[in-house]
Image (cartoon, rainbow, N blue to C red):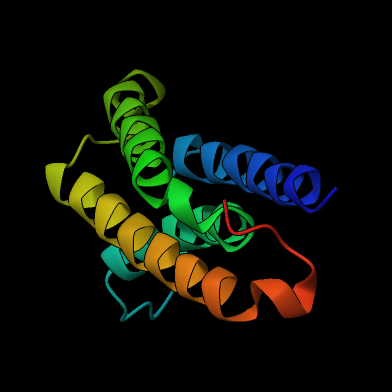
Length: 118
């Protein structure tokens, strides 16, 4: 059941990320933070739930998210956005941090949360 919830959360976040990254850029007035931080946070959030429930899936999770981030970058020019290699790198770094944090939480807290360590 925990895996289904984690996959559901990740599926929802996948949809949110797709909508936000493929929507036209409106720009936030006074935005001082690099959008790379937002990329890393979004993709880290995407990786975290699955790896909490299945810590040993960390590498596969990062790989799948890296492919997803790459596909988004390839699609963006077709919807009036720019394709940036640095955005993709930020996606991968965020996924790695999120997967690592999720795996650590899963391994340390798994038995307390009733989660399998597989």
